[in-house]
Length: 318
Image (cartoon, rainbow, N blue to C red; front, side, top):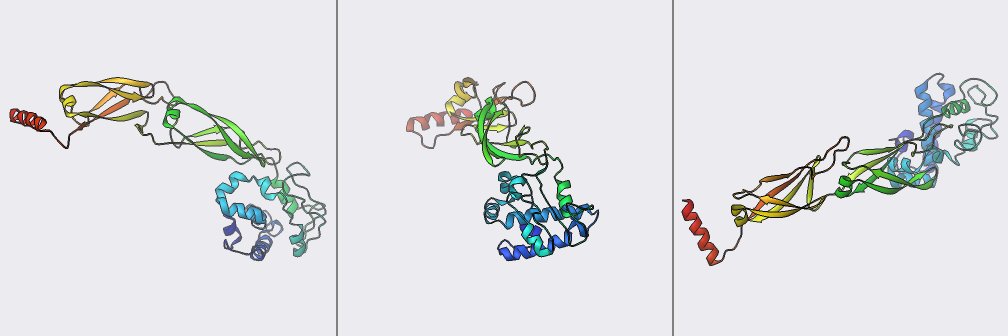
């Protein structure tokens, strides 16, 4: 993710004058007229202008500092970044003769969102009237149809929703407005998986297609169940006598309570399987299993009668 401060070589506490001076120096260094045919310099020049468009605007800079690079780009498209950015004044200081280099870099004018008139370069090429790779031509080429930026949105759901599937309404900032989008979450989804919604990202550039929206799933911890792949584990505690004599208990599952038979002589940490009571497979048929893990409760305090019975048992064991 782009760090605009590093791009311009300034600190996060830099003043507007310091940012402007750094931009002037780098813009002249990487100007396309000074770097004919150098694609790397052209990309550097474009990135420099993007960084200056953000850091020279107090509100955009505040948003960038508040949300960080990734959060900022989730809220601002490239059109938003350059909207209202007029470099005419600063390029006049460089020696350019211009009545209107760009009213805005994105939005209005020709296809691709650029508009420029009567632009001439101090390095010998004329923008609107002459040939060659001048500044305006460079940005016009950059405005060729391009896919919009993809957007990632984090969505947290319960383990039950992950097992059964769900549908959620999320709010996404697109094209400078907030849009509500319905997201269908399939059964079997796991933490870290991404759901792709084609065309729901940021708007394309120069008539290009919009980017995609990726919904990244996070699943909350459950108070009763622990997930391992498509299987779930349930801890249940039984008494010493139940373990020795056997019993039947009820355990919760995603499909309600199920009866589980505990055979006589069951030891601690025994796992009893409930076939098909786990989480559905995401990409194929079938479900995982549920495992009931048995813990035996040993009493900390005994009555005199209980102690006598256990001592009697202990003698028989010997």
